[in-house]
Length: 291
Image (cartoon, rainbow, N blue to C red; front, side, top):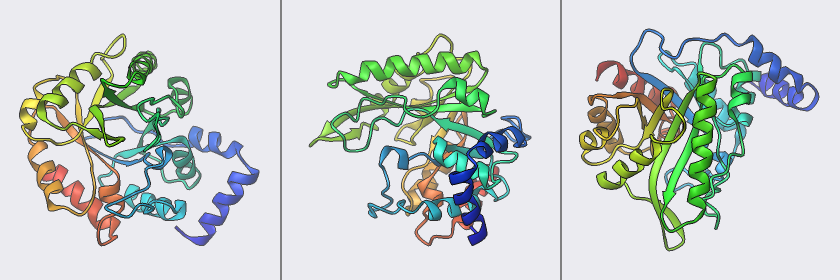
């Protein structure tokens, strides 16, 4: 990001807050499907939950300047369809003019701060359906961690169901990221076994008054073909940590399965081991186009 763009962004944030809404109104929009059957969406909603670590570096995402630089690089690459992020990141990118002709999915529930005693209480602390519709965005994403031993789970389920219903009333995508989760030594862990993922999908896809606009965001697991048989909803693959050839191999295999409509990746593309964001994104585009 150029120094003058950074300075202009700081000035807009301080003295011209109205420019956020103006930029959203002026943004060139595109249909969800635009000539291709698969989507590549760049994710950047980790920081709002206090999750700043990448591949063993606990504060890798601490610099907003670096994150925005990586995001603008990624979004400018041919074949990238859109962004998934919280309002702060989306609005920075709007002010930088980086979201024209892109799908924008707003992250909705970031209340389950990483490592907190209340982590399962994933309250809706960011976008709601009305604000997403008013900004002219395309959908909302929600994390839905199901912890059988944690009473906060039922409130999260109810909130996610309400959000799905409200998004559908606006004709917007509801992107649900379901996990069967539990605590191990006080740390929330996801059970990625096929049986656990099937249970999580079964609960997640049943949320809301209609599933007509619901998509699922799922990790690649063992027996992925069996896991995907649990749903008829569109599936986007979850990115994961960078630095492993296994990630790319797993994406390649899963993209061949029925119902998989693309990839939502954040750290794996924004913070690759060699820091070459453009090359990592281009490789993901090639994978989507050739698999």
